[in-house]
Image (tube, rainbow, N blue to C red; front, side, top):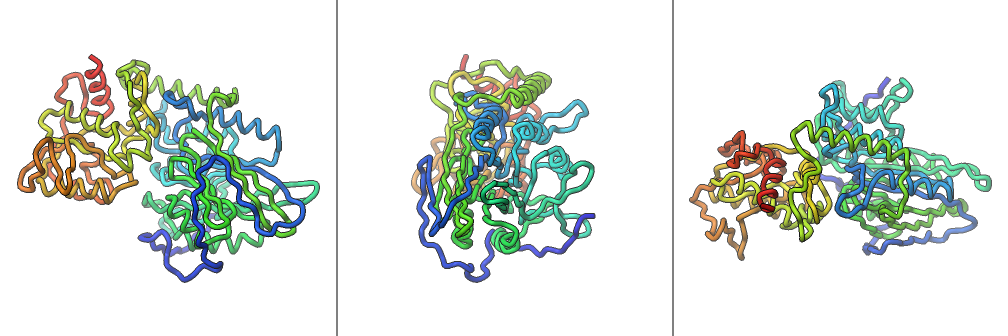
Length: 527
């Protein structure tokens, strides 16, 4: 029977002000950007027990990038095999964001139901990961879809601040294990057996940022949850590590306020980073398993201290693929091909030659003007000639990679998996400036950061084309229907503006779908 409890939450702040931490404040906060870094244990004494952790985070694609040839979960499995052959004391973790979004995940199976992450679970089961926590994108799925993925998974889940809302209150998420519901606990204890030291108990905590506010999810405050769970876990563990799916500044704040973890294995930020805060190492690998972190830890039982060495390993063609995992990957890639063709796409058709790399990485499109944002906006203006300008939310761009050389239809499908129509929104110059100021300044680093076309800023003034934006003038702005519906943070007011969503673009060969429009536009540039 599930345990049900009442949990009072305060969502506006990630870290509640609740007095000083138990430990002295940490002042050192120096980023360590080299590929390998070591934090020595203070005052470690006697012999040590060594083990390793292979870390991934934010994995949306199962195969290697077509542009960079980085990534691929069959290669990750190949690396894991090599490491296990050297030392069996290895565990593999995934610090959130893997069930959504992806082109495959949005396709329908033979019963007409969305795949919704099942392909990723099947591949990860084949890789043989040990532990995972929730990322915010796990909650893109409905509860039924998430539960089905969790039931399929052979790995264990954990979180100390994510809970399941049910009509009677709040309880733990659970998964079916051999016909019995098993709660997702607030922590995990992994037991290593060693002939010299006996049982070494590794405790792991995990937490997720309260970003995706679905009605079936309940978040407790990260700091309070981590602190209270650590205090409970301490009696059952010899050493304790953390998995987090937080923004890096929140990771660093947590490490400052709780200077108790020798290692925090993080996610959410898609580019690799290695940050040191006091005696805590914070590590994040590149998204889509373009790289992984290998952490080598030496635990000293006599002093209960730990030394951490972290090495970033690129997942490239030098790593042999695991043949069994490759079979599973190939099966799902074949499914993607068939799904594309069933939707009247030709996935392997070359539609454009990119002589200059087109930057679709999340770190670019969510923080500054990007050439892919301009190109997408230009495709809207090409498709709807009456539009004065175009804006789009960077969160709709999901490739997190470069496009270069021969661009195929499948690249656009991977980049824009959500699809969706373009709306024409009528707005005053005042509302347009409000949209730009909020979307390009208040939303920096978020999916609501706006990319624009035919809009520039010089000094204090915005320009549409060659003319300064006029508060009294009416503008027709092309934007994704999702954005026009007010579904982006701080831009909810767009839902109240007058809009039109046409069935087709002005170009007779293009349906009104951002993927079709972009494909047709790139083809037109090549003619």
